[in-house]
Length: 491
Image (cartoon, rainbow, N blue to C red; front, side, top):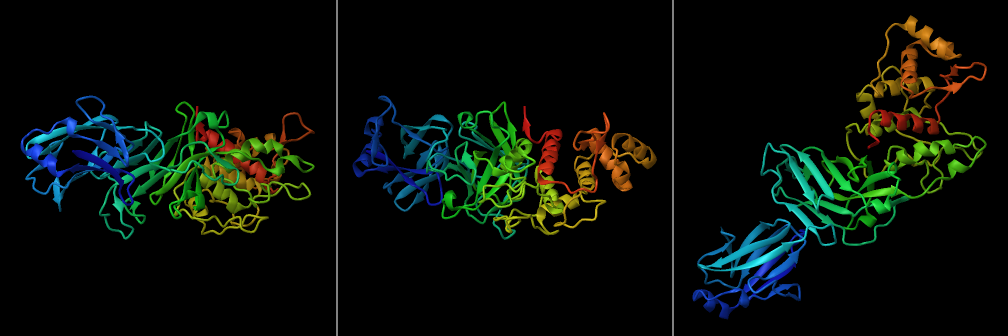
């Protein structure tokens, strides 16, 4: 009889099918008498009944299998679906047999006698499922797109993609696998709860990296989300003993596509690990304390927090860091605002850090000019024109300069004309530095920064250019910038 048996490959999520040819079956093969009645099919220790009198059918959750014709050393030629298997001791092996979703007929021929078996590949996002691309370089010049589990995950790697072995050499194996985290329990991270399966994306070696970033799209579970689409994000867990519950993680944000119930992020070139969609499930005490309540900022702060664009100053305190103990609004530094802009606009940056130390002092944001996000803002010209000191508080006119440059707004060069226009809008226009006036007018025209109504006048404002910008105000500005740039979501 022929007994197909499954066993796990080391470091592989796909399975190996072993077809055992017993000694008495060899005589049947030699006589050309082998038929489907001689086949018993096993997955592990479970026998799978034949689908009908003509075929033996069994299910797998992997699109790739290795087929081993075992214990038949006297055969001269063994083919599987017309492809010659390789001798391996007493066995014959054909590796990386690709399957299509649904039923796949596999013809095993031994010295001219053959038998058909049917493997039913179930393409579903469930524990033990696996999708594998054997060679991402196979179609050089074409877009490499990995679409797994009925479209619940899509990884677009672009053209001319290669895996590097981590030492600036082409990796020996150019395969990528997508699997499902087998444990149903995923530990919540601070205020985040799962809104999708947790997917493991891996290469043959943990040191392998891609030559460039890709784009990752994951569908979310609508019943776990409801209408809270602004607070959806993608978390990336780096492996820790193969358990994401003990792994450091990076908040990648993402752009939501409401129509397709999916979210898309940049897939870092060094980004192998676990990925899942998460939603914010908690709140912060800042919105309910203080004389001047900042609850109005909740609409802007929570989405930015969800996307990893803005973080609480002390994550374990229950406060976001918008107000002080006596209810006064906290101020934002130049470095934090530069970081928010770089993250919000998804600028390319030098590296992803495993742990974010920017908030380690608990009460204020500290960073340096060498921070990769600050560098990204600087390289894109967002800091041009202001005296930059990362840990100094940001004035409102400095914020106007940075936001106008980040939004790539039109600036008028006629300073006399701009000064006259600004003086009609703002009652404190003389306090606005001349170099900042074109930027202040630009953010006013686009509704990114307006100012405060002057109660003495019907349609005029105060800009308070030299006053420091608060963290709550910064959240509103960056949120509106993302809406302007169509980064927040797709309707």
